[in-house]
Length: 470
Image (cartoon, rainbow, N blue to C red):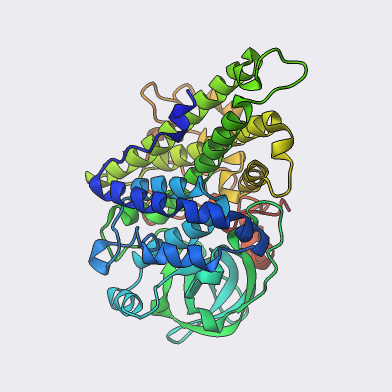
C-alpha cells in the first residue's frame, strides 16, 4: 500500500506531464535546501532561480504570452508535486504563480504585453483581498496602507494590494450593483517598503512579510477587479471567475503535505521497534489499520479535489456559466481536504515518535506546516456550513436542499455564501455569479458586511498562510 504514496502522478496531458517532470527534476535541490529555507524564512536563491529557469514560474500564464498555458487543474498537480519536497516552497510559489496568472486575465492587453516583455520576469506577490480604501483620483487611485502576508514577495518583481474604491474621506464609492468596488492595484516592487518580519513556526520559509505602501498613485489600467468583472482573456482560468478560482490552489498544498508526511511515517515505522511490540511498528495491526484508513481518506480527498476542479473547467469550456453550486463545491472541497490532510499529518506525527518532534526533523517540519496551512481564511470550517446552504435547521426545513445526483445544494435557504452576501435565486435554481460579488467570503471574520465597509482597515481579510481569529 505504501507504494501508492510514492507512485508518480499520472498526467492528463503531455503538457501536464512535461511540467510534472520539471517539478520532479528539482525535487532533490528543494529537499536539500528545505532546512535553509525554513531557517532563512524565505525560498533560497538556488530554488527561486530554478523555478524561473525551468519555466515553473509562468506555467499558468497563457501560451500566447510566453507561458505554459496549463489548466488550473494541471497546475494544481504541479503545486502538489513541489509541496512534497517542501511545503514553504510550494506555498510561496503557488501564491505568486496563481496570483500572477489571475491578474493577467483582467489587465488591458496592452498593459499585459508591456509587463510580459520586460527583461525581468513578471511575478506578483501581495495581499490581494480588499483591506484599505484606494482614493479615486483622475486617472487612477491613491493607495496608502500597511499590508500583510505577502507570500513569495522576496522573489517577486511586482506587488499587489487589495483596496476598495473610495472618495477623499475614505467612504466606499458604490458600483452599479450598489456594493463597494473591490480592486487590486499593481505596483513595481521598488515603490513598496517591506519588513522582514515573517517569524512563525509553520510554513516558516514562505517569506510572507508585511509591507507598506505610502500614498502611491496607481494608474487605473494597472488595477483589476477582485471579484466579478469581465476578463480580457478567454482561457479557462478566467472563465472560472475569481470567485471560484481564488482558493483552489490551497488544496494541492494540503495534499502534498499529507502525502509526504505519510510517506515519511511509513518509512520510519518499517523497521522501527518498541519494547512493548512483538513486531516492528509498521507490521503491527494497530498501526496498519489506522494507516489504511488515513491513506484511503487521502486518496479520496485527492480524487474529490480534482473532480470538483475538472467538473468546473468542463462546464465553463462547454459554454456554461459558473453557478453558486460550483462555488459551493469548491468551498466544501477546500475545507474538507484540509480536515483530511490535517488528520493524516496528525497520525504521522503520532506514529513518528521522536523523529517527529525534532526541531530540524523533516517530519516535524511538515507537521508544523500543516498546522499553519489549516489557519487560512479560505479553508475555515465555516466554509462547510456555507457550502451546505446554512445550518442543520435549514437542512431539516428545506425538503429539496440537496439533490440526488451530486450538486451540494439548491440555495433555497438563500445563504449561498453564509453570513455576508445573500443569493436568493428564483425557485431554488442555481444562477450565474459572473458580475456578482460574494462578499461573505471576503469578510468571513467580520461581524457584518456593513461594519466591514465602515471600518475596512480593521477587517481581517487576506491571502497569506496564517491568520488572526479576531
